[in-house]
Amino acid sequence: MNWDLRTFDVLDSTNEEAWRLADAGAPEGVAVLAKSQTAGRGRRGRSWESPEGNLFLSLLLRPAVPPAEAAKLSFLAAVALGETIELAAPGLTGRVRCKWPNDVLVDGAKVSGVLLESRTRPDGALDWVIAGIGANLVHKPIHTLYPATALADHGDIHNPVDFAGWLLARFGYWYARWKTDGFAPVREAWLKRAHGLGQQIVVRLPEGELHGRFAALDDSGALLLELPDGRRQAITAGDVFPVG
Image (tube, rainbow, N blue to C red; front, side, top):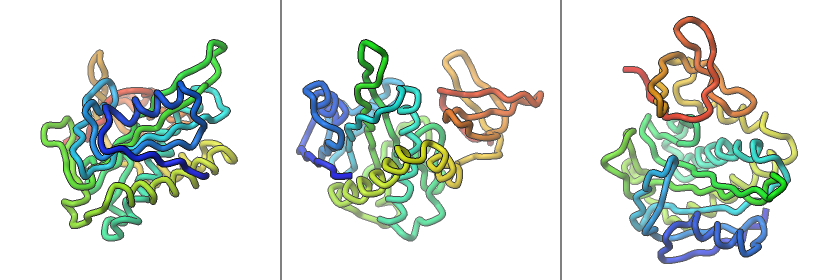
């Protein structure tokens, strides 16, 4: 895939800029990179700390698939991120894991995350999807729901532009394969890195908590939680934490 990488010193949000470009008719393949953000955001409306030195990248995509299928791109992005981190920091090979639904961990601490945003046409067809990707290259947030780390904590310092180039290459590979072969190979690659698979977890939902075993990832991308009574419940949204 031929990416059109557009770099900025500062933006409100790379996702916002990609959104503006999408609404103006920009084609698939535009990638927006900023040195810093003034209004970065993560999942569920949370703010995303955006100091200079970290990666803030958003990709504009226009796949010809239903909106539900496009939602699986978060797993594709996580796989591409995991591979990119190991390319940038070979010493971390085997220590990079994917945390459901769209985070990447190093030694159990969050190093990056993905935010998907999309728009549909009046007929319900997908117009565009933006994959916003943030990675802690140098700095890490302190007050978070989940432990955080940065590549610099492990002795690996990388320029965001270089890291973005490696990531675009890996994302492009998986995006082409997803369009040709569907979600199955992405799901398989994600499961090889799945954090907590087969272990006891807590899923925090707006209405409360669920406890059980992370049994599987189904074909839709839902986490299958095996409850204490043996039933399996599909989880499509929530925050996942290990037990103990």
